[in-house]
Length: 112
Image (cartoon, rainbow, N blue to C red; front, side):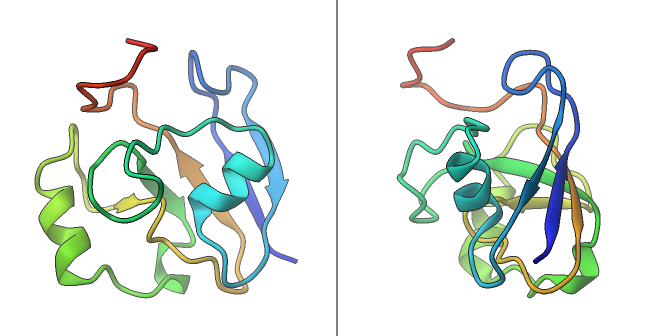
């Protein structure tokens, strides 16, 4: 079973976490199931940028982002070459290291 290392994030996961993922589930689904509350304003439907993450290790094991995901990533805060929407990053059979950005663009979040 692949593992996802979530790097420490000031408010979402201050200690960081190591979680188990099922091959075929998204990074966001695995995180939420493990009580790592990644924002997901569109309910994992690839219609926003709130679940943007950086895949710091294991990016090559993921399917490439499709055109819709790329279009949304163009709107996300702090995009870099390792950026993915966690709702669209489907876990394969390799471990991943994930960093949650410091900021997200979410005009409706009650946590901001």
